[in-house]
Length: 244
Image 1 (tube, rainbow, N blue to C red):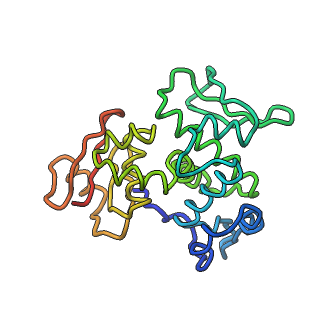
Image 2 (cartoon, rainbow, N blue to C red):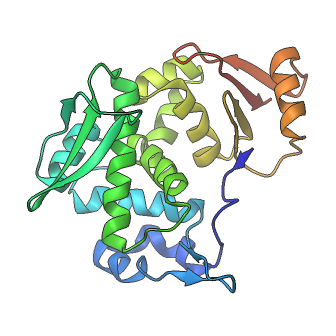
Image 3 (cartoon, one colour):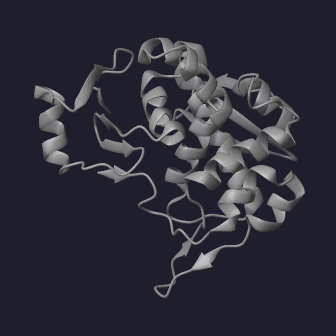
């Protein structure tokens, strides 16, 4: 079971609190500072607040408003100076960040639905950002998943949408993302305890008495009085459990 924050070391205090007030040049000087554990493992000193702060910094670098995001393809164009290109990708990759001479380009698999494409672009753009920060650690895919989602739906934008809309399907449509991403951002931005159950079990939100993965899967089938069960309709075999 993947739990948010389980694979990163939490070492920041004032950093998380002050990040929203900092300008981009200050962030550049802070983010490359990595930490090596006693076991020799290099980790990124990033918690959920830092992910949100990075997303805001990236929007600032692109001179875009995180309260009214322009969409990932336009964000990519503003930052990389190249268009997102649709292509026939080899293997199982849905998207890829590629260096072509002196340009970075993002390619996405032909036929990818727009909501999924938004996240794939965000994930690859997060890889570009991590490269700028000099980070290549073992947990980079999880960090890029988290940062990619925050780029699709920056916290100020998502919170504003949720003030108007409660239904998961309608929230997903409003932010231009998958229903799974909408559920996870609910936990990440508002702190609502949520579990997304599919090929894996992902938990987000404030601390809550989640049982074992096997028990969460059982509850996803049978239901529970303390949890609202939401069937994910745009991806197969997924269910969201949201604290009532």
